[in-house]
Image (cartoon, rainbow, N blue to C red; front, top):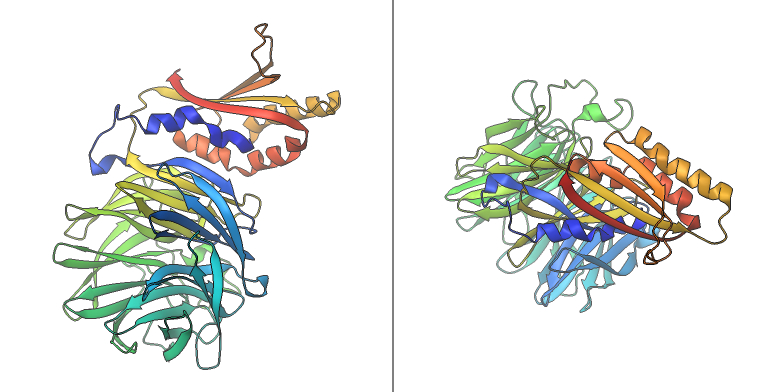
Length: 507
């Protein structure tokens, strides 16, 4: 139900150190909060800290929803921001400080524009610049943005999916306006056709940019100079044996010791219709995997390691890879997946080897909308669903896995119907709730009854539904399942009040 987010008992457990291991290998994402958004869905999520306050920006078709984020991972809606022509979706979003002013840069995908917003003291936004696509630039169907800070100025790099794709660089002026510096058209050598992921490494005073080409199935490296210009260094394409770059999607990186790595995921073209959206339809599917590239002294990409998807991992349709933490020369990364509808944690060690950790089945697919955010010593993930029926953004705390033993989860929904609800409506609502077990197999058991307490402390609640789940995955899938959302929408208008509590117990 809509107020399931009030499951206090479960969240209290997360604050207890009981049964928690301190081993990095035991880390797990745990749901903290979720809120509705005004946009039709969520495509991109980013976050920002300003003057000690933390904000989350969830962008979708039509606009951006703005939330404050507290130390417990709770989201509080504080406003919305419309996009140019009310288009969008807000695909690429990056927040940064430029010479003392905080800005949010937004790639308006179907508006063919880059919008610059000043981040105000309360986290709200004020548009200060609108940069439109031209024949000279590559801002059409803009998707990915990357801020690059150089000695004398800062630059915004832009990539996208337009018919004449490429890579563009703009100088960011102090007022947030963008001045075009250089654009390079895609060709048969570089992989800039459909740039969905970009990352920057600074190595011994030199700056390098790495891009993934979704349509041309490969990755490229570029040297970026102090004046914002850039040149290609090397390029690595997909193959049908040991590389997993068809539909190259998220790109990130990390320094561990003296080693610099770039990590690349992909949403394989097999997950799309071959005719129409995908330009090259003669691809071969040989599985899903996350690729690691080591950077040599010239800044070039060198294939290094691949973590292949198997029955124990959730790596199908990777759309976002975020660095959760870097400590003791190892990094924890979170992989958001569209087709597995999960958040998979993985570990990258100093030698460049990836090891799968735990995953959480979120119950909704992630379409680029995943963001890692740190508050004090706590790591959070902010995720959004691209489902038009869901319209939710959720937060997860990355914490040591709780040893549940053989316990199961009880999910208790206590409710009452409005006085004006007819007997027929109530009976129909009860039957709909009973039937949900047939539509969501993750529900292990469901029972219900009408309140028969004589103590007078029921607060007017009349019906109790008790659902049982085997694990955290089951509850997540239930919370965001299409059948549950449909149930809420159907019976919500006749619900007078509801109280939800969850607890773990021996079966």
